[in-house]
Length: 211
Image (cartoon, rainbow, N blue to C red; front, side, top):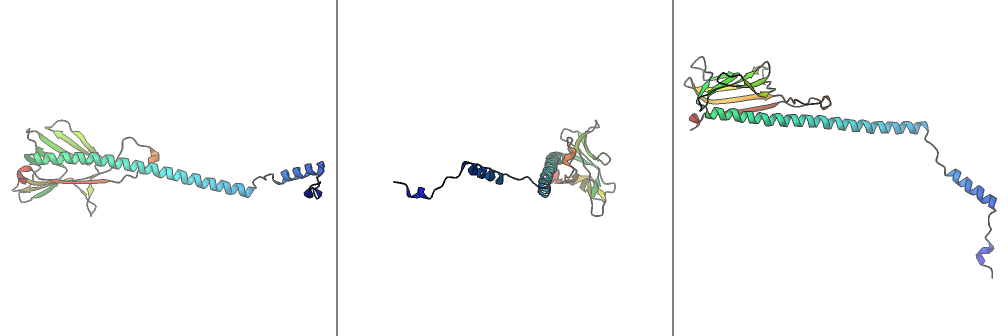
């Protein structure tokens, strides 16, 4: 008995079947990009590359600024701590006011005598922007580089050491005010120069005055 569905079923001739398959493959074939689509793709690619390079440049500059600031701040704090310790343990200080009636002076250097009876001089060289350390007249050594100095509100460059005296030659308090510009020895041009200046301020009293 014949299948009821096969009564309406007709097989396609082989030639028509081949032509239909060929036409279907030709219809689904992908066409290429036109000029407008190529230009749009290039514009998108250029935008992405520009954004990537801008982010890379920003990361380099941020890394450079952060490392220089942290390094300079760490070294500056160590130097400041050392100077304040010498002031606290010192026994005799200078320079003195030229007028005994003057109690506070500002100077580019400070002198004091240590417990080992050594005369220590710490001075700021305005020309080379360095903080120098000298013991008993020996050749000075560099304590800190890049000390640009602190500028007042009137635009005047101030001396870093402020000494307050009592009774002429008796030091009551010494204040140190340093402004340091970060300056890494090893750096690349691509990193830029965006490090901010660092201000270090400290004050100390000799122990004979504190106790």
